[in-house]
Amino acid sequence: MRFHTLASGSTGNCSIILAGKGSDQVTVGLDCGIAQRTARQFAESVGASLTSLDAVLLTHRHSDHSANIVPVAARAKAPLYAGEGALGTNSRTSWSELQRRDVEYRAIADRGSFKVGPLLITPIEVPHDAEPTFGFIFEADGQRAAYFTDLGRTEVLLEKGLLDGIDTLVLESNHDVTMLANGPYPSMLKHRVGGDLGHLSNDQTSELLAAAAPTSLKNLVLAHLSLKNNKPELALEAAAAGLAARGLSGVDVVVAPARGPLRESPKLF
Image 1 (cartoon, rainbow, N blue to C red):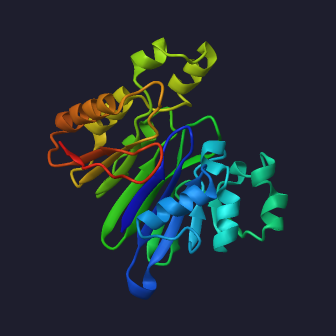
Image 2 (cartoon, rainbow, N blue to C red):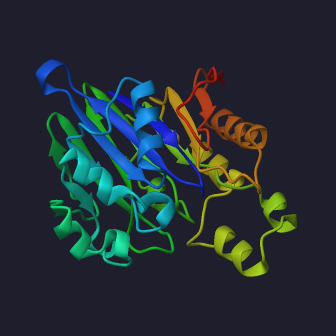
């Protein structure tokens, strides 16, 4: 199984998952809040095709995740898996638009696992100010991966056994608390981002890793970093502290770029 972030952050999100082998291989798109052409180019650069997807997943309705999700599903002729509340809130994801583009909709629910070929997908509902918002756990090829961004609290991920066996984890590390407090955002937006239904801070991510990072973890991708309220080195430092507190070493830790797939060398903690 391969997991690639193609864009990550408030300016747009898109990822792609490949699982299985030979005739059983499937390709799944996750969110698309960037231009289709850009997403296609990024996918091609990692050996995947955004126009040959077997399924498309949507985490939630915010435009940085959903803006082009319907056109992507339509062009690939792939079913769109999303929570009912994630669609119909604007013209780009309206029910009439899905019908016009002949997109098959399949509802998802918390812990309601389903399969796309050999890939088992489990949606996990998380606290965010766009109800419902989902993270996902993926299982295939003897591997287990997870994707969790856009959540303001971590108690869901602290559930006993939830992260067991995860070897690749894409996890939000959105902002540095001090940078957010002293940054350019208006007061209302600062409270939203830092609130219980906003985004995880570096400190929250570190605390989660210290409490619940699985011993199986090999790859950690820090995602959805704020361009104005965070720095990669701060996110990496906080993650390293959390992993150390958990007693884990040998984990490859990288920061997902705001645009483009990962190119940098992983950092070993």
